[in-house]
Length: 520
Image (cartoon, rainbow, N blue to C red; front, side, top):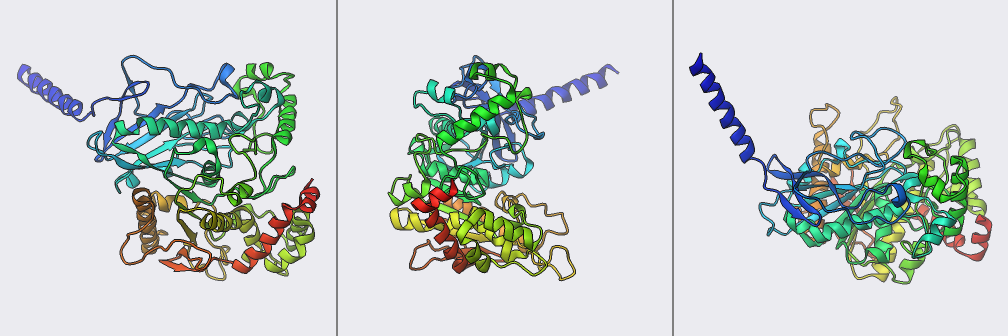
């Protein structure tokens, strides 16, 4: 009996020694030592603080440096997501400014290119802990993958006259974007400890994350913090508008401050001091509340982004930008032809009839031709404008894509006539498709592999090439080539180009004195 017990103890100590040996040594970041874990050939760190908790008197202020700590901080699980409507996988908290790192580096001297993920969610929700954002497979392609959190909703973007008056810049709002900038500064300062290259950082995001990427490309506060940018269904080139629509989401500081007063009133607070005393859980929440979107504040976002790009005032880095074929399936509100026509006339005024011709509705249905107006207003025109402006005004290359990967739905299917909806591309890019799902085809896996390789090549080289024999040419006005992902990867033309030109006349008019006055 004693001999058996001794054998068990020896085995336990041996096993624990093996586990201990497999733990990576702590690494030093700005605030102190952190401990990660080994996972499938990578070293992974989760829940690394990059800024102080934005709570109490730091609510609705620019992020402050995280406090230093003694000893070794265990960074082995995701931190809570920001406060939001809904329940993210890792929970939620006002204390939310953390990032995660997947690194293939074997030493701090490896200097591996870095990809920094910014999640979407309409600036109202989002989390780095979503399984589809797991960075393991992209990191295995030779990049350090970082995912960053930022404040969302009114906690991330509320403007208010009192907040503006207490700010050194006399502005307010855009705290979520300042969080992203603070994270990028932290990454640039600390990523070498993870084996990453601080001079080869590429930001990428989808939806609100892609819009964030676009805004960071235009923000003087982000200058020098990244050397490449990838936008998946993003862009923010529409003019400001008091009543916002997808693609015309931005308000001025003055308009946003008025929204902030309405929000405070809904919360039952007469001052910002009172508003800061209300717990995050008790603040008004849900969709449709004022004050939950970035604004043209004159500081983080100095002006209408289209105007900034026309003047050459942007962070001129290579960009890889695109959108999905049926974004309108997620964003087109008209369920009948009559509702579609009514919505177009409400939004587009005197350009409504031209746009209905360019994006025609069916006699008894709202087909993809009509849904594509919502797609292009929110994403297609934004991407096309970005590509045109940067290729004309900048020195860095633009790589333009169109994602249209979906089954050929039969006529008796409820999905007949549908393309790729908003967000479908994310699992492809992260190489996180479920290969055991019978609906996932060989073509899906090949497209995913191509996109994952193009994206990581872009982080490594500043362009998505080389990948086999198919080269992805840079976009230019004389030869506006677009990479299509549709059962296979191939180069083609800008989708719906003639319709985009009609939409462009509307946006040009909106920037005229007449169009600006009409929108008010």
